[in-house]
Length: 360
Image (cartoon, rainbow, N blue to C red; front, top):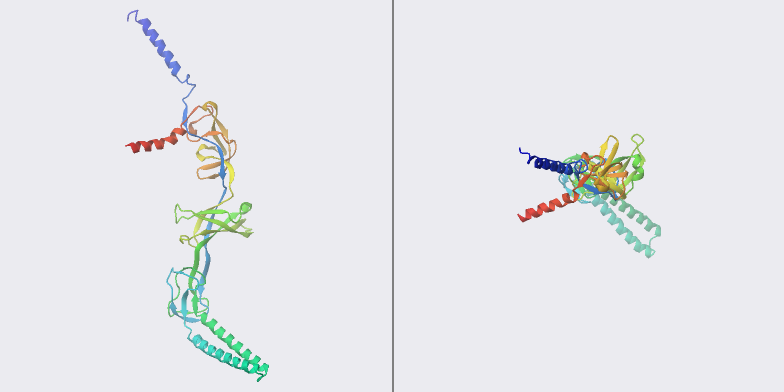
């Protein structure tokens, strides 16, 4: 290497070192900025929820039974039929009552005719008034006997006391039934009652009319809505819980009596500071978030948390409305680090992709 070239090489080497020093981490103020997304903390409507397990009951439920000892003549329903109130379910043999009804009706007609004749005679003062009173008593007694036979005859015709769904029938034509023999079950499930127990500590937070949402394992993804109807007047001294009854519309009859539902009772809305749950870093009992300050540097802030719901958590203290906190990427941060916020780019990215797809 000639002496004339050495100064040129030395100058180039010094220039390269100066460039590396200017562009290196020291010149940039330390480690490279962390890529994160952020959000601004704001007060939002929040509704606290009480969670519980409940059991469904029919709005009305009864076991249809016989009142007399008699033989079944006709069964007028099938298993699972929908019936209206007054629908005839079973006819029982009532031949003796039918004959007795004809006899009682004839006796009443005769006594009524006799009474009308005596009324005409008494009006002309041809018979004493006491004789007319005696005949009136005879007519009333005949009417009472007729009504009694009719009532006994009606007991031989078993009808639905209200509209609902019938269960499995328990009798067949020719069956001899006795008082108390079950004919079938009848349930009105157009509206379901949902009974659930709540610890007494929540008693002051319960009131009729509160909204209720419920889910069943039989219908994944479906949510049933209703309202609190009644709160029991007593607290169980053993469990220290109070029973609450809600009503849930069941127009499509999806719910059946005896089902287990998970439910939430919502209290009136209030304003609360709510942040995404993934923005909170939990260490044992302590929780903190990273708040963005001047120059896009972050500081670690301890927070006190309240109620939680799907993907969100209430902040009771530690933050103020308007604070900007880190959402995604907080796990790689340390206090004092500088961030690069890509929230706007992440939000705009899907539409850009859709536009590119549309162009193709």
